[in-house]
Amino acid sequence: MSIMLGWMKRLPKTRITVRSYSLSNGFSTLSTVDNIAGPIEDVDLEEFRQRAFIPATPIVIRITDSTVPSSSKTSPSHKSLPAAEKWFRHEPWHRTTGYLSQFRDTILPYELIIDSKGKHLQEYINWAQADSNAGSQELAAFLAQLLSQSKYQTFHRFSAPLSLFLEACRATPSSIIPPRLYVAQAQIVDLPKQLRDDLPTPRIVKEAGKGDIYDANIWMGIPPTYTPLHRDPNPNLFVQLASSKRVRLFGPDIGSAIFRDVQQRIGQYGSASFRGDEMMAGPERDVLDEVVWGNDVNGEGLEAVVAPGDALFIPKGWWHSIKSVGSDVTASVNWWFR
Image 1 (cartoon, helix red, strand yellow):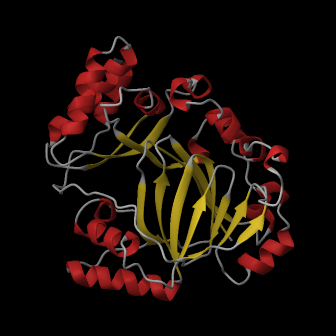
Image 2: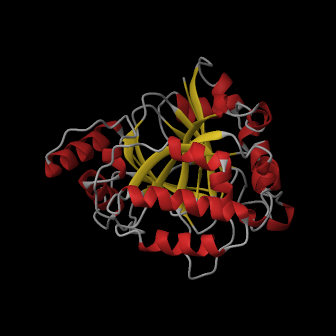
């Protein structure tokens, strides 16, 4: 239980009481983000500069070409970063986590969203406690401790080993909803060397501009995962490793207007460049989700679905919100650069 105790020691002591939220699928009338032929390592750098980097316009680098017959297409996992093949090559992935299990003690930052009364999480805890697997029982004990701290808090941040995520990815009965764990913004530099080597920096990041890299992170989640509307202080190259994500983007002026309107509606003045608790729980999250993903979304925005192996370039200052697609484990990696 030494790892288990380590998890508990890292739990934050202060909590904010919030209500639960449902995320709508939304109805989109937004224009689609323009595409450029990939995969990412084969993209024409000059074309990327002229169409996206210099004019600061979002673009999706597609790993497959729709004009190529499906029988001639290579599996996306073989064209993406090594991590896509090594970490997520098995189907279903959650039953075969052998490669990542050797790094199970690696400490990562987590986010967890719980339904308002903790009903689904309690059902999962009961199932895991009855499971014969020792890892499931340790996970159940950890989650029970978390739930007992505040029965009305729906959003938690903490640090814990990778083993927490791997155990949560185990197959469950259809009636059991797994915990919505999200490894959020785990810096690549903090990963073991073998995992860092699986995530080599793409040529675009190193050669399209000055070659300055500000940060690089991995994101792995049990769906549904969600990132509220925000903007980054640097250009962002976002590469999908497993499953797909839907992204909605708004230009700097439009996004700023949306964010100001939301802030006025809730009577708050938060930061749009920091992934704070106010974005993840509370009235700001609720209203942002309604405005960005509801039926009345601003028609001047853009939308993209980023599939495994695809990359999305998000220019500096462009506002964006991201949701997972489907029910499989999702994973992404991103670089902030210039």
